[in-house]
Image (cartoon, rainbow, N blue to C red; front, side, top):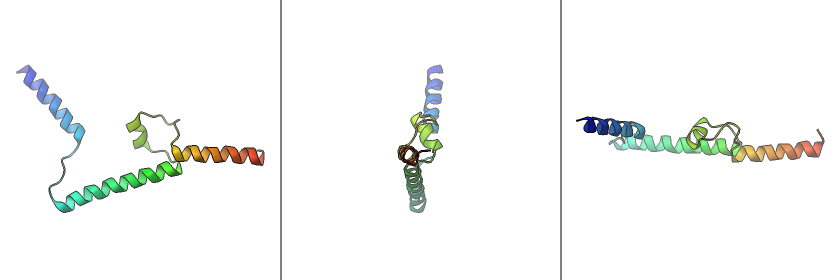
Length: 87
């Protein structure tokens, strides 16, 4: 019985990690897909512009000190500009 309870608890935790189930209705499926596309586009824009993205940091175990692609480019141009201008 203990083994069954432990396995049930483990399975429930796995289900919780997976999130809510996929909807059955076509309109609800379209809404889920639209939300996923919108999140992807926003993350892509943030990466290009060098904005900090808490979701990306949490998912990749990165720190705030790590720079994304856009932030690295921005920092390179800033450093180049300061050398050129002589600040």
